[in-house]
Image (cartoon, rainbow, N blue to C red; front, side, top):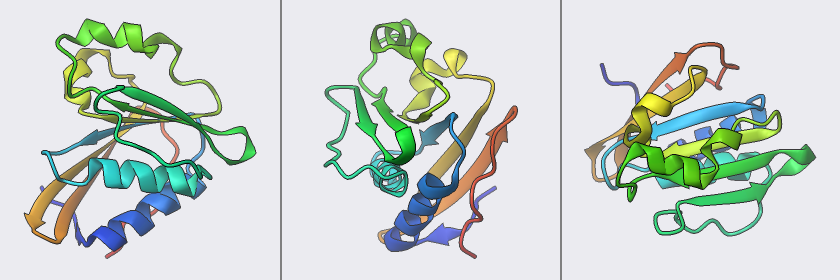
Length: 150
């Protein structure tokens, strides 16, 4: 099932609303093909959470941590380059989920069996050069996300 289609500005605005309103701790698994907008959405969520630093893609460093407002820390991970799921332990996976953390993970399928039971999954799809489908799925006990634009 495919969710609503959003333009990149709509996706960014929704991401900023997530970052501004979601209750930490929260783990968000960002799924989608290359170019679907996972990093765009992750940066928007971080901006909404008060991150003002530039956010390079974590593709090569795999994990970045950013201070947000009111003591929130945004953890942005990209697991695309992992060779095996057990490699996440070297990235500090065990320590994720502190009470003040918003954890954003791109390519979560690289560590599928290790994903926390309580998480949001957001799947982005390319429907046109300037449009993305967005599907959201809660797992376990998670705080609500803002409504998607209609």
